[in-house]
Amino acid sequence: MNRGLTRAVIFDLDGTLIDSAPDIHAAANTLMARHGFAPFTPSETRSFIGSGVPHFITCCLRARDRAGDAALRAQLIAEFIELYETAVTLTQVYPGVPDALTALTATPYALGLCTNKPVMPARAVLAHLGLDAHFPVVIGGDSLTVRKPDPAPLHAAVAGLGARDVVYVGDSEVDAETAARAGLPFALYTQGYRKGPVADITHDRAFDDFAELPGIVADLLS
Ligand SMILES: O=C(O)COP(=O)(O)O
Ligand SMILES: [Mg+2]
Image (cartoon, rainbow, N blue to C red; front, side, top):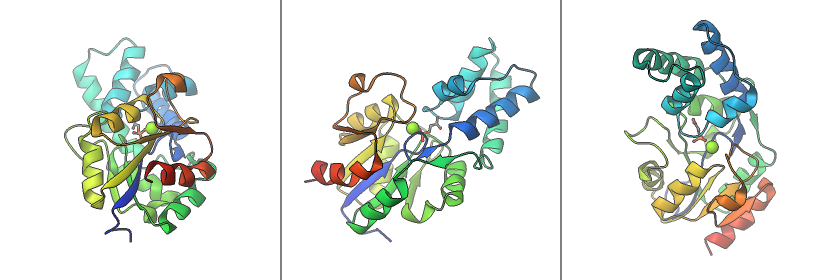
């Protein structure tokens, strides 16, 4: 257990540790078919990920000209969350992630998770992939009344770990803004679901291979 360490690394989940877009895509298209809407392409689905389930469903409905239907939106949010909890079989861990987590834990740093994915599906996919033991603290998109880019979930993850010197690691514009608003250094994983070029995203370090991460964290916390 990592509690008691003052140095920590906190991770985003979707597009950072795991390529979960195929499962999210399948769940979205199950939902679309159920309600008589045309399916989305994988890249359309990927472009909807990063700001949590309510935003994801808003994007789905906007793409089908039904964004104004509040009752349908509420219904789809509830149904999507239910589908989400078993949507784990198509998800893959990005290359080098297990070794990087093991190396960081051994350093030792405390590890935490701060994602906009709801906590139940986040925990389900972490357990399915055998990564759950690394993360004593998991803050999800439904843990607080606000979600990223509000800094409060990241502050909650830091407080949960009892850490003082922290790096946040994420893949998106939302994560960069969250880290900046929380006043924490940010390492950008470039192989996830960002919307624009790396140069347009504020970051302290960028990396495309998890083998680089332990060195980056050591630099940022030195
Ligand atoms: O659920 C989402 O939209 C994104 O999740 P993330 O914060 O782990 O990238
Ligand atoms: Mg992400």
